[in-house]
Length: 362
Image 1: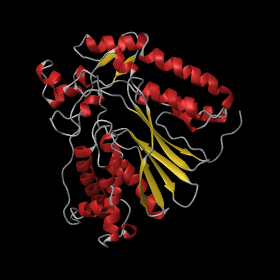
Image 2: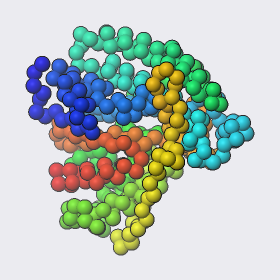
Image 3: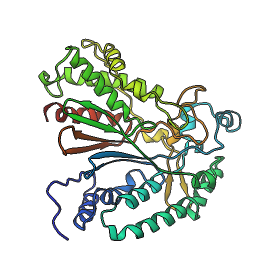
Image 4: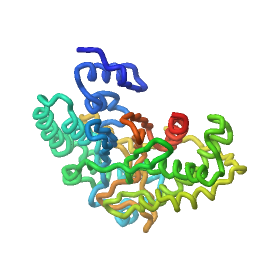
C-alpha cells in the first residue's frame, strides 16, 4: 500500500469510517470504492442512496438515483378506505410509509460500474448480480415483505424485484465562475439551485452585492434564509417522481422565473420564526425491522402528501419527495472540483451557507 495522494480528502463523522476510506484509497481504490466502504449505516441497507460522480477523463458529471418506490398496490383509496389513514403524521409512522429499499442496489451498481481495478470488474459484476437478487428476491426480500404484510402493508416480492437504480444527468446552475450540480427531482437538490438563482438575480438587479457583505452577518444570513424559504415553497409544491408526473425543472431554473421570485425578498423584513424540533419520542420512523436480517425499513413514503391532485400525492409504484441531497461544485474553466453533501431535510441550509464563500471568493 502506498501513501494516499495529497489531493484526496475524506470527511466523515466517525474516525473509524474515515480510516476505512483511507485504507481503500491506499489500496488503489477510487472514490466509488471508498464511498461504499464508509458509513453505510448512516442511511442503512433498508434506506435509499443518491450519488453524484465526476469523470475526470470526460470531465462530465453523472448522477445515480437509488430511491425506492411505493408498493404497486398502495393507493390513496386503499389508504383512506381500508387502512383508515388520513392524518399525515399517523401515515408517516405507519407501515404504509415504507418504500422499497434502494440503497443496496445503488451501492452494488456503483461499485460494479466504477471500480478502479479492472481485474476485479467481472467479480464485482457477478457479485452485483447475485447480490441484488439475493437481497430483493431471496431470504432477505421475503423477510422484508413479511415484516410489512404482517403489519397490514401491501408490499410484495414483485415490488422488490422490480426495483432499479436510475443513472441520470444531473441538473445544474452556473454561479459566478462555478457550476453547482444536483440530483434532479424526485430529490430536493433543486432547492439549492433555485435559492442560488434568486441570489444571483438580486445581484444582477443591483439589489445586493454579496462580496461587500460580511460573511455570516445578519444581512448575509437574512438573504440566504429568505432565498431558501422561497425555494422550499417551490420544491414542496412541484417536486415529485418525474416518471409519474411532470416536474417543471427547466421553468423553475429559468432566469425570468428566478427574477420574479427574487422580487419577493424584502431586505428589511426578517423572519423571526424558529422551527420547532421533532424529538424521537413522538415517533418519526416506521419502527419496522425485517426479522433476522437487521434491515431497518425506512419510512421515506412519509414525504408524500395525502392531498388528492397534489403533484407529490401518494400513489402506486411512485418515488416520494426525497431529502438526500449530494451536491457537487465544479469550476467552469478548469478541471478543479469540490463535493459537499449533507443529511437532508432542513440541513440543506448548511450547503448554501458553506458554499457561498467558495463560490464568491474562490
